[in-house]
Length: 337
Image (cartoon, rainbow, N blue to C red; front, side, top):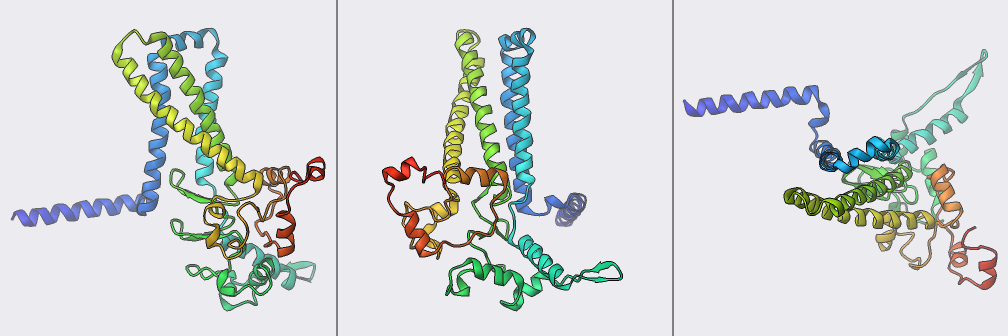
């Protein structure tokens, strides 16, 4: 009898979970479920840090009454950081499959569009089927032109997606897709960082760093004034301040690292795994093969002027970029342009 009741309870729990997954499909996938939990934890951490600060610090409340603009700026930064976080987390990094569809659609439009009785007739083939058929598809020809002549096709065909990868693209095992200009997969955001959202990611860590530093300043100011008062409040504030300072140091280092990547037009994957990339393994470490200069790189990064289809530099171009700097190069700003 007890075994029958146990089976009945387990079946009822399974039916309830199935009903929950039916109403909330995002919870059925363990990866998405984990990503949603991390996002919830991050939001709660922000609210806890700000809430405890306004709950304990009476001087801050008094300052808010006297100078409301100060607290308004802090809350504006707080809100902008969370908004930027969700914008980055919900944005697409730029998938190869979407680029295939765009290139195939454009090629079919240019080839098959014709005027009939004053109207255009457009026929669109399946880009995935065309890409898998061989090197006759527009995408395959485009990717082949981006790689150096004589490059074996196995070097740029993804063994998981079976699609042609342009230079700087990589298959992400967490997203199970090939990402254009792949940088890394961010666990806290629950998405890849790539061509389309790397700029948003930089602005997020910039705002997050500024928010952490400002919050740490407010915590230090509270402890400086109220350290001799209620001990348990001070203990809570000190413990939270230690974690906040560690987070601030990490965020600042991450911000500096990605700023360096932007100035040199590199990605995290290219910098760390260079020896595993066929067209970069022979390039010296001090040479940035896709570098356009310290002025052009940030412009293309922020303004979107750079295409996701970047050609692999020829040996002559790599030799030119590896040439040591001279005084004349410094005067003519060779590093910038």
